[in-house]
Length: 303
Image 1 (cartoon, one colour):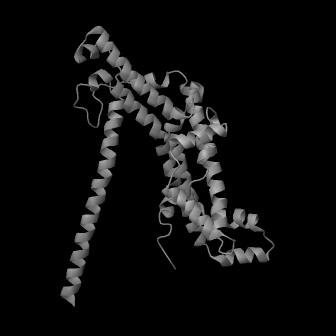
Image 2 (spheres, rainbow, N blue to C red):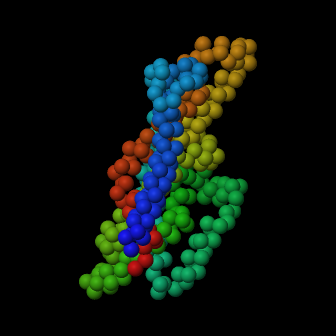
């Protein structure tokens, strides 16, 4: 028995070492590229083109960020991104929670049919052209509401919330009904306060999706004053690369001759843009990390 116990303990230690090693390698594969991007964003673009920069800037410079921040419409684009992220996330989480609370009821007529219908939308899509025609007929194109209304519901988020709500014991609702609560009161005073983990997860998914979405602003909005931050920065990078190519062709300069006349390059702007886009999410995440860690375990434990 002693030998078997010793072997089991040794095997568990080996498994733990392997698991911890894999986790450390995974963390390094995420952290090290980010540190490299951060170092390049604070390094002079002309110097960065020479290479050899890994995790610390060689020639410190804020000109990359100045070039991005001082561009036209950057303040307006930042405001639009904040508006769509805050309004879109709050509205989507609340409406998705209401729909999920309804679908969790086993007594509602047709609940299985509606669940399958919602799941069907996860498997098939109408395509970009029909989607654009629908937005146009609804008069949503070239308006700020094209960022909010079409993304109010997500079938995946709806199923996640419904699964979490089903784990809340039905006796809580029955007790509330005996106290005179209606369905909306139960939803607001019992279900929502007990659902902070799943709300944090869905809110984070929605916020990241809204903040990083450049496609909607690029394809469904024509006015430059309605472009969100991600779309504006993506267009800035495209124009910077195109301008660099035109200048090289017009002046007949080599790449190294061109770098002598440039302090900010397309690559250095790209690194600064990445930091500007991901910084708000990184700042917000620690405040909801506790709920997010609980929420990722949704559906993993059955009692």
